[in-house]
Image 1 (cartoon, rainbow, N blue to C red):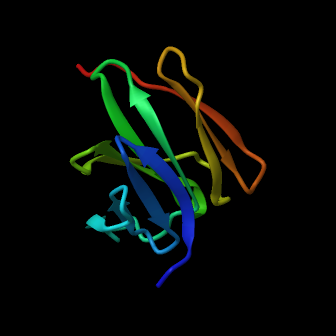
Image 2 (cartoon, rainbow, N blue to C red):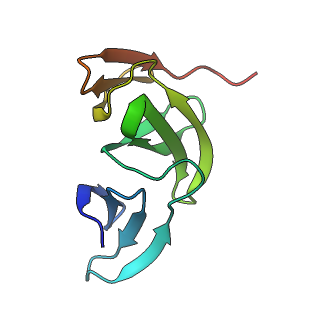
Length: 122
């Protein structure tokens, strides 16, 4: 079993992100309700955050990975939204929802700080 990278509360449950790219959902009694991954190239988790996609009004789980990659999943259905890169080689060390205008930030072990903003589809 891989180590837990981050625990994130969500709608009375806990999302547990593991270093091997797995994300599990546990209910309030600690019973596993769902397990996802690893999937495709998403085989690591180095940082995880739950952010709000304001245009779709959806919660999105961002899974930071090795080599500057981030995979996004619509929650609660774990539908993959896509994978993108910071353009830096270092592992993602933190992801923070800035709480306004759909802006979030990623931080990497190579010293990079990147601000992102959700765009409207179409």
